[in-house]
Length: 193
Image (cartoon, rainbow, N blue to C red; front, side, top):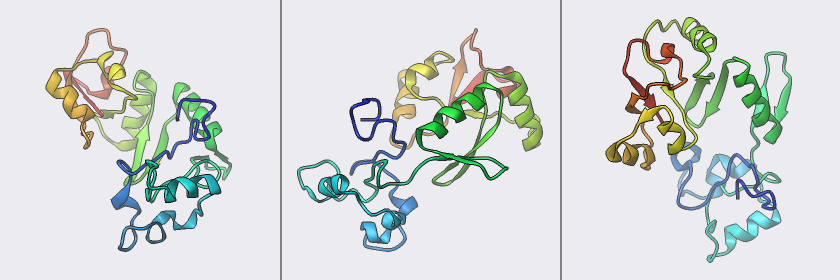
């Protein structure tokens, strides 16, 4: 769905179904039904409502069910109060990271500060702003193949990275990885999630 241009949820950031999702982060009251979640402010469009009410659909009673028409939107906001939403915001955020900018990414449980881990200047600026002289930063990767370009991954480490909990896993850095040394100063390992 996410990567198929013909799908109505193509590149929609908040894809969800019954077996995964932000249950504890969106619940406001019990029972766990849509009106008792933060999704109550997003009325379902006819297509999402059909999926939500169809017992044979994988989105049957998935409380966070949504699409670009009826669900929450990702946005990129600037100090100037300018705001960009949707896929344009994601694409611009990628460009800004490539330019060495630092972004605050609001997630379900708080904020992640993000920069290009291969950009020495961006990593050093983040260190200065965080007043974190030598504590290692964790790295976020899209998939296991991305992690394996930078670190050796054993079977047990792979299982941890792909587990339901998705913890930060300390991995042996590979020689030649473009990750800036300042990400984990004087450390032979990188922490990936």
